[in-house]
Length: 255
Image (tube, rainbow, N blue to C red):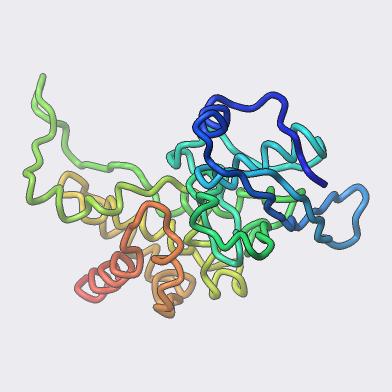
């Protein structure tokens, strides 16, 4: 089915006015409606796209113009909220950051929900297990002393640089749901939880590193990581996740 987007957004209209060529792109989406389907099914849609469009734009056009029952999460559409993590051509990505020009449109583009979390509908998964692991590592500052009256807690640039990379996490679950261990073991904390523990373990203003290290020294903690680097490759923020997990392992060994 070909879409004629009568209510084209501004960026699409500008592309059209500038003479940029559009293409008919086939999207094959793994659909699942728990009220109707016993198992997920693949449905294909042909969508008119521009190279500068994103996969999220295609999902919008399908939902708005073709099939309003298509369900997916999205919010800011600028790669910050992490809501629209999904598998695109077999890789975990954010739909809002995946440009059509970066995909091989001579072949169908496959879109499905991320793995390892309970499927609720279409591209939507139940994130509760993911956030439960996140909360379990106590991802908040826990100092034992109060700052001086009217003063902030001092931290040098050098001390901040130690954990700067892991402050970039947007909790999209792209890393955790790309991990083979997480797929097969529902108890594993997963990369995102460890990354957020790392952010506070190495914060010079925090005094609860020993508590978090004890939590992650559990059999379902850092030692379940098999260093496959899937998580690092999947992270849309470019966090060196495998390196962060290795640093937490070293911290556990050092005590």
